[in-house]
Structure formats: structure tokens, C-alpha cells
Amino acid sequence: MLCRNCGRQIGDDVKACGMCGAKTGVELFGMPKTETETLIERQLKEKMVVTKRDDDKSTSILIISIISILVIILIISVIVLSRIIGA
Ligand SMILES: [Zn+2]
Image 1 (cartoon, rainbow, N blue to C red):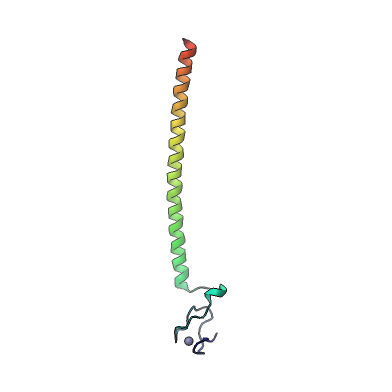
Image 2 (cartoon, helix red, strand yellow; image 1 turned 135 degrees about the horizontal axis):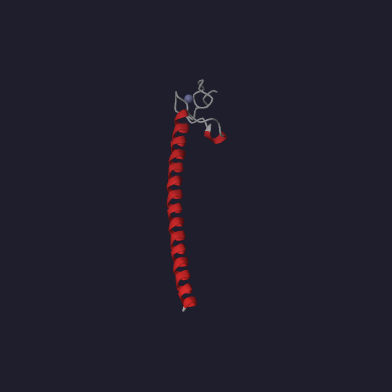
């Protein structure tokens, strides 16, 4: 396409003119992004996935802890009840 500012031929998917630096408005129309941007986005997504994994891990540990406590309470209850019944 042609730059709206200086009228020179520039790539169809560039955000700004390489000659004068004027913004092309490509972002506004959801056109393909530059490779650098895509790479940064990919890295951010990977980071988010890693963070999510960490969250899942801590959630699992929390659930296991709660279940363990419940099981211990249940065992104690059964022991106490059997003593009451036995007595
Ligand atoms: Zn230009």
C-alpha cells in the first residue's frame, strides 16, 4: 500500500511507514501484525501458561491438604464413635 503521509510504497502489513514513520492504521483494522509483535505475544502466552500451571499446582496442593485434613477428621470421628459404641 501507499503511505498516507509521504505517499511512498510500503508493506501492506506494516504499522508505520519505514520512510517517514507515519502510522498506517493497520492495527485498527485487525490486519496481520509484524513478526516481532507475534513473537512477543507468543512469549507472553507461554508465560501465562507457565503461570497457570503454577496456579494449578498450588490449587492441587491445597485440595490435597483439605482432603487429608477431612480424612484425618473422619478417622478420628470413627475412632471416637467406635469407643462410644464399645463403651
Ligand atoms: Zn511515509
